[in-house]
Length: 205
Ligand code: C5P
Image (cartoon, rainbow, N blue to C red; front, side):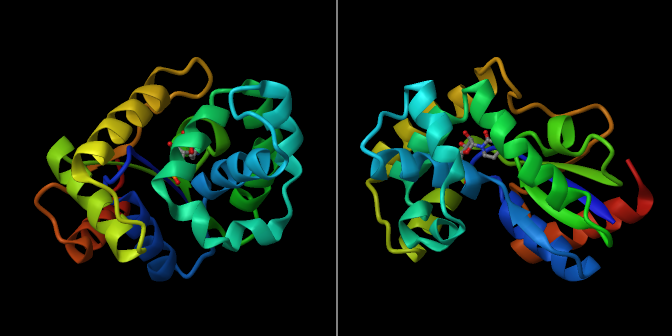
C-alpha cells in the first residue's frame, strides 16, 4: 500500500499520514524534513538559502541532522521553503524519496508534491486542507507544544508567505491532483480525520 498525503501548512496532514502508516502498518516519511535539513545544512555551511549552488551543496546533509529538534521550528521551515524552489534541490531529494516510496510492502509519504511528482502511481492520494484560521491555530499549537513559541501575528505572516511560495513556485507547486481524495479537517478531530481517511481509501476516490 503506497499512500501519498499532501496539503498546506497546519492542515493536519501529518497526523493523518502518521495515522495511516500505523493503520496500514507501513513506514512513514515526512519529506518536509529533507527540505528543512537542506536549509539547516546551508546555514551550518555558512551559505545562503537563496543561492542555488549553496542549497545544492547542502543536499548531502548527514542523516543524523534529520533528528535535530531545531528542524521543527518555523524559522527553519521558512528557510526550507526557500531552498525548495530550486529544481536542482528537488531533483537531488527526488531519488531518496522515490526509493522510500517504492520499497517493498508500501509506505506513507507526506509533503507537497508526493502525488504529483514522487509517487503519481500511489494506490491512494490524499489532499488535506482546512480553513486558514484553523490551519494557523493548528500550527501555532504545534509550535507551542514543541516549545518553539511564536507570536500569532508573526506566525500568520510567515504562514501566508510560505503558503504563497509553495503554491506559486514553478517547480512542483502544491496542487491537488484530479484523482486525489480531498479531506477537509476544519471540523474534524485528529482521530476522526484519520478514520475518515481510512474509510475514503477503502471506498476509493
Ligand atoms: O511539510 P513541512 O512544513 O515540514 O515542509 C517545509 C517546507 O518544505 C514546505 O513549506 C515546502 O516549501 C517544502 N516541501 C516541499 N515539498 C515537499 C515537502 C516540503 O517543497 N514534498
